[in-house]
Structure formats: structure tokens, C-alpha cells
Length: 360
Image (cartoon, rainbow, N blue to C red):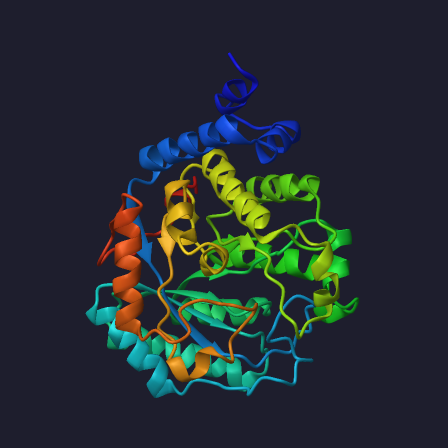
């Protein structure tokens, strides 16, 4: 039996195994992808679940060095969707059987923001007769806020760690209490305690990042016992401090390939979690999202944000689908999913099986 076959038959990967898989090429790389495809089919099936994405606001109090909507970037027009606009997007998702939406925003912790999200959650629940499940991705909040939103109808929460190495985390964020690594870990623990399906994720191909860091990221996901993951290639933005390191980065193609490997390995490691095929994959490769579906991803996020706001919600450059209305985006993604050999779970929440099967 070859080394790759030995590893892929293991019940639990070691860090050395992960490094070997991340370094795989040619036939071994294809073996990894084929194994991930088999595991996906066996444990979560061939359905892909839509999460209609609503990019609610680009106001953010954080100054993360990699992010285009960081507080220190004065080039963007700051916006906040109206309640009517949010509910129109929800109505589109409801009428088109998406069954789930994601409300994403720059991080805000003021009382007005917290109360408005709570109000929107209650209105979404009422408007759709409880048939739309809501994922929030609104950054670090207090336990009281997480509970308010959970009780108002939020079911899942995505809080990306971005990097699990504390030393690397410091290089990507200002060194202050608002960007504290341990505070982010505590927020993830609080989300679990509150009852959410908890998601996190990382960027792949960052400045200063090594394959050892990526292997540790995968171990972090397993140790934290996450329910869902959203990860993809790091893509630089000219209006961020990290842009100065653009000439030291891996080529885009290498970042994309590493991202596919991360998706595939995570699918094999954590067989029944939800894994998103992220938009950043398509930024590098026109067929990036369907390639991610073919190696283990099972969630995709059609953009429901009004087109007039999308140019001002660029976390990274060259983001695709900025001028596509919701119906165009839906048609495009339907085609991509069928090309990948999957079907769409219309009308299904697509909750994480890992979450549902976790022992009490």
C-alpha cells in the first residue's frame, strides 16, 4: 500500500499526515480529491444547500490588516441596508425555496445595531412562518447579545478565526484588546454554549503563513468540534496594510490549489460537517466553486445583496458577481452545481449533520 493510501485509510490524521496531504501532487492529489468526494457522498450526500447572502452593512469597528472594509479604509462609501431592503431579500429567498439566509456585516457592537438585528430576526421569522433558517456572521459580541439573537430566531453563527496560530494572528491584526486572539476563541466557545451551530474558517495563502500553520488550522477545527466551515484563498486588497507583501505571496493558482486540498482534507477529517464553496474560490478560477463542491463542499451562498451596495462590500479585490441580480446569480449557481454532479436541496434547511448528531 502506498503512503497516500495508508494515510487516507486512517481514522484520525496526525499533523505529519496533514502535511503530507497538503504537499500532495499529481496522482496523490487526485487520490485525495477522490477520497473526499466519496466521503461527501457517503456522509452528507450529493445535495448542495443554498444560503442566500445578505451583506447588511460595511460599517466595521475593526482594523484587520487583510480586510477591505476595515475601519481605517476611507475609500468606501459606508452603507447599511434598510429593513425594507433586508426583508425584500428574505422574501426572494422564501419564494425561491432557499430555506436559509446569511446576514453578514462588518463588526458593530452598539446598542442600536444589536437591537436592529434582533428586530430583523423576529420579523424574518414572522414573515416566513419560521421556514427560513438564519445564519449570522456579525463578529465578536457579548454572551448576552448572542443569546438575544439566538432567542430571536438565529440558528447558526459563522465567526472565522482566520488563523489558529496566535503569533500569526498578531501579524494580521492590530495588537489591542479589540483584536485579541483569546477573545475570539472565547466568542467561539460562547456561541457553542448558547446553542448555535458554530462555524469558523481560515484564509489560505496569507503572508507569513506556512503549511504547518494550515495543518494546525485543520487540527483546530477538529479539536474545537466545529459544525460548519467557510474557508478559501487569501486575495489581497490594495487598501490594506498586508498589500505591501503582495510580491511575497504564493501565486494565485497555488493558493487556489491549497484551498481545494484544505476542503478535501477537512471533509475526510470531519465527515458530516457543512463546508461552504466560497466566492473567493471563483475569484481565482472561473469554475472554483464547482471544483470545491467536487472535493467536499456542500453549501453555496447566492448573493441577495442589492447590486448598488456590492462595490462597497469588497473584503478582497476582483470579487465576482458584483453586477448580477439575485435571479441571475441563482441561475448561474444552479448550472454550476449541476456541472459538479450535485443537486440543490431546495426547501431544506441543510442543518449540519454534525450538530444534529452530536451527543447531548
